[in-house]
Amino acid sequence: MSQSKDKKANKKTVHIQDGQTNKNSVKDEPEKDKPLKVTALRYDPEKNNSPVIVAAGTGFVAQNILNVAEENGIPIYHDDSAATLLSKLQMGQEIPPELFQIVVNIYVSLLNLAEGNDGSERLF
Image (tube, rainbow, N blue to C red):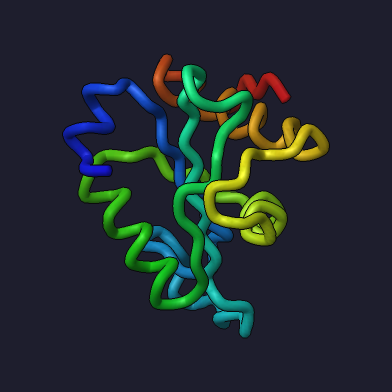
């Protein structure tokens, strides 16, 4: 679905990154051998009961997903364990209840960011 259609439908897409390579990483630290992992979620309450995996990848594909997210102003949440767990799900799969806490943490973090909270008052 095109980005303009997504905006009109008012759907939320979030990208979860494992943090191995990003523009803010410290260059002096040795790179881990673990490849970059990215998972993108979308939640459309009219179609789904929970967020759905809409994109996922590692390495080059993951970097492309991040580039698209950045170009379109889509929030990126950095969390190694969230990216690892969510990347094991299938494309189009709804987030299962046992992973809801991860999604809650992501959305609370994004709400804090949107409200201008610097994250020092974490709610989770």
